[in-house]
Length: 186
Ligand code: HEM
Ligand code: HEM
Image 1 (tube, rainbow, N blue to C red):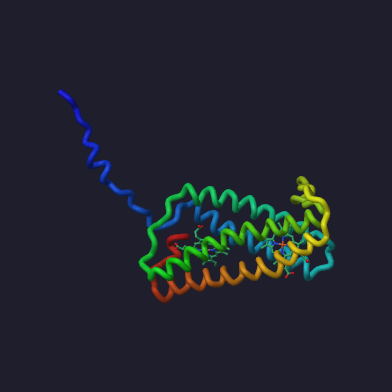
Image 2 (tube, rainbow, N blue to C red):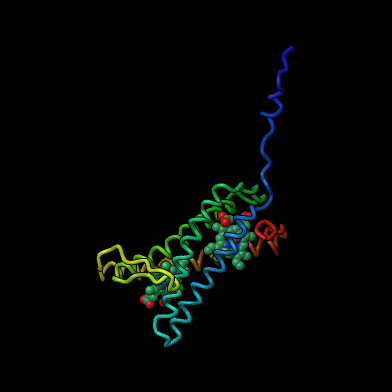
C-alpha cells in the first residue's frame, strides 16, 4: 500500500499578505524618525550656540548612527513580508511607493554626504568620545565644499519636501479616507 501525500492542495494555497508592517519595520520606521529629529536638533543647537564643536560633534555622531540604523532597516525591510496595498488609485500607489523609495535613498545620501564633506575637509569623526572614524580620503577643499552644498542645499530640502508629502498622504488617509492607515505602522 502506498501512502501518497496530498501535495496538490498544499501547492495551490497562496500566501495571504498581512495587513500591517512587521514589528521590526515599525521599530525601524519610528526609530529613524526619532534619530532624524535628534540629528536635526543637534545642528540647530550648534547654529544657535557658542559651545564650540560640541553639538556639531554630536550631529556628526548621531548622523553616522543613522547611517548604520538605515543599513539594519533595509535588511529588516527586505526580509519582512510586505502588507497588502490599500485599495487606492494606481497613481496614488505609485506616488506612495516612489516617496518611500526616495526617503530611503535620501536617508542614506544625507549621512554619506556629511561623512564625505568631513573627510574631504581633513577631519575625523568623533563617535561620542568612544572612538574616531579617521579620514580615509586625501584632503580636498573643493570636494568638501561640493558635499557640503549637497548636504545642506540639496538633500536636506529634498528630505523636508518628501517627508511633508509622506505625512500629508498619511493624514489624508487617516482623516479624510478614514482607512486607519496608522494602524499599519503603529
Ligand atoms: C509623523 C511622521 C510620520 C508619519 C505619521 C508616518 C506615517 C507612515 C505610515 C502610516 C506608513 C505606512 C504606509 C503604508 O502602510 O502604506 C509609513 C511608512 C513609511 N514611512 Fe513614514 N511616517 C512619518 C515619518 C516618516 C519619515 C520622517 C520617514 C523618512 C524620512 C518615513 C518613511 C517611511 C517609509 C520608507 C515607509 C514605508 C515602510 C518602510 O519601508 O519602512 N516616515 N509612514
Ligand atoms: C541623516 C543624517 C543627517 C542629517 C539629517 C543632517 C542634517 C543637517 C542639516 C539640516 C544641516 C544644516 C544645514 C544648514 O545650515 O542649512 C547640517 C549641517 C552639517 N552637517 Fe549634517 N546631517 C546628517 C548627517 C551628517 C553627518 C553623518 C555628518 C558628518 C559626519 C554631518 C556633518 C554636518 C556638518 C559639518 C554640517 C555643517 C555644515 C556647515 O555649517 O557648513 N551631517 N546637517
